[in-house]
Amino acid sequence: KNQVEQSPQSLIILEGKNCTLQCNYTVSPFSNLRWYKQDTGRGPVSLTIMTFSENTKSNGRYTATLDADTKQSSLHITASQLSDSASYICVVSAWGSQGNLIFGKGTKLSVKP
Amino acid sequence: GAVVSQHPSWVICKSGTSVKIECRSLDFQATTMFWYRQFPKQSLMLMATSNEGSKATYEQGVEKDKFLINHASLTLSTLTVTSAHPEDSSFYICSARDRWRTTQETQYFGPGTRLLVL
Image 1 (cartoon, chains in turn green, orange):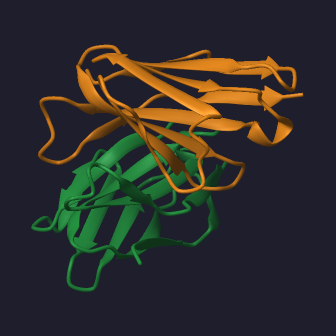
Image 2: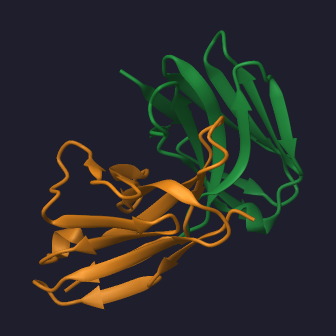
């Protein structure tokens, strides 16, 4: 069964600190993995997208890694800001799925001053 | 680029009424749009896939007669919640796939519509 699991469920950090969010997946055949940021009451916004051959991708203070062998991904946030408070969702797409995405439940990040 | 809008952003209605939600791709053409529902503290759940000019494909457990989807043009899909009940209260999000950028199956999400049925 195709699944995406994220950890931790929630995380509280102080402003300026770094953090890393984890994503494990069992999706086959794998097409790509994306990280989205979803502010409360808003739609998801794409941060990164990685295909099988990509190990790392950065978007400003966000850096995503992908290990296709172990089927794990991480999202590292550097020098966190209050505006980083949001849910971060890991989403995996399978080949031939006609665009259907498999969503993780997200990690709720709270950045405190 | 790649902006998806939804209207309305929030709606409150009485039980038994119907509510229409619009999803528009503003600067690209979308042959395929997706409708999701998200309950509090839950992840997005795909309700249906909407293809321009044809019938929508509904996920298991989603009543097609209750959630009517129309994708009449390459930039507009609508979701109508018919005879809404309080349990239909949720956050409805659409996404659109760029017609010309399908290699990575990129989907662009709308900002969502909050529905509250009293």
